[in-house]
Image 1 (cartoon, rainbow, N blue to C red):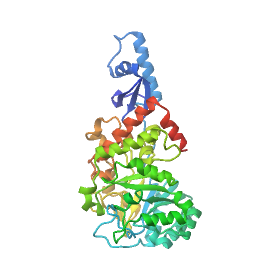
Image 2 (tube, rainbow, N blue to C red):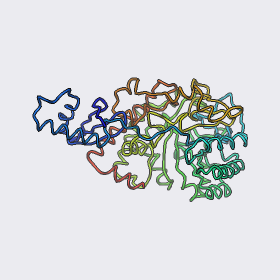
Image 3 (tube, rainbow, N blue to C red):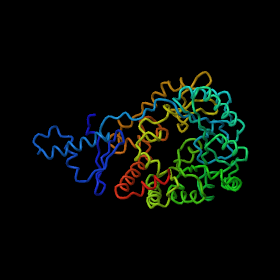
Image 4 (cartoon, rainbow, N blue to C red):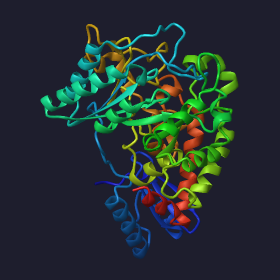
Length: 448
């Protein structure tokens, strides 16, 4: 393989020098004194240079090539569907003020069962070996009998096609009962629980249709089904109201004994359109909140507890891009992911604004997942490459960030500024920490 020095970016990290391939995300850490020799890699010729210098430069060249840093490396392919989101209903027993998934023009409806089963069968045909189905809403536990039929028929369809299938879901879990818990355990359905923190934080925006907070409903489910609820990971929506309280939120859910804690950053669509001025994130304030959280993780406070607003960046740095479909140049939208709404509309990703320029790839009525995935709009979405645009075009972290989320950015060539600022902060802090301590390596090991 031939080394391309134009792909390399150098970042001093104390006694070390981080060498990053901004196209692949691969990196090496070298002694800081290697920097002048690394810069000679781009020289047209080394004939006038002393032999010992040429030998040192050649050794560095071999080291980089062997580590696949600065060379063409196709990496894993993402050309096959592997994830299907099913929006079972757009009805919900809550009316969260920021809900990205509720549009005023919508009416409460439930997905047609045959449409859901047809979508699963088609997705199984398109996937290579295993399909991950995410049960979503609205609130999917409002239509529990439908969930059971979809899971049972989906498992049977997977067996018939010789494929594997896994189900997970996102829920406010306020409708949990023994039947739901039992069926979920029997069929290995992994649930994510949507709640924002202690009652004063949660109840500011996660409210019922009458305006009252929803935390008491969660507390009751936790009291009745403690083991089941604690087996779930938590997802909190982060807005201007709680962006500097990330550490307190993570501590709260760790102390409750939950399986993990993650965030979803506010998106001003759905109900959130009317609250953008009040809830819009501030990059600096969010960064301060994340930095305090990171310092606690680095200080070993959260060993054994997955703090996903940190681990999403740490995993990408340590393992390379690809595992997180939202943090790579070829994002999952319309590629390895499709979403089917309750009315049968097929979307590239459920976070894409359904009334925006990237909404609506097709419809299950008279169409298919395959035809939607081959539609010109899907091809346009998959063509996104922020590597051609400022500020991504020269960013050291481009491969590890992917150019920020297309859905939050709002269009193909647009950037999501808050996520850009977060990625730059996170990868800088992580790389600096790894250069001086094993704390993050130990933390990652504690989660296995």
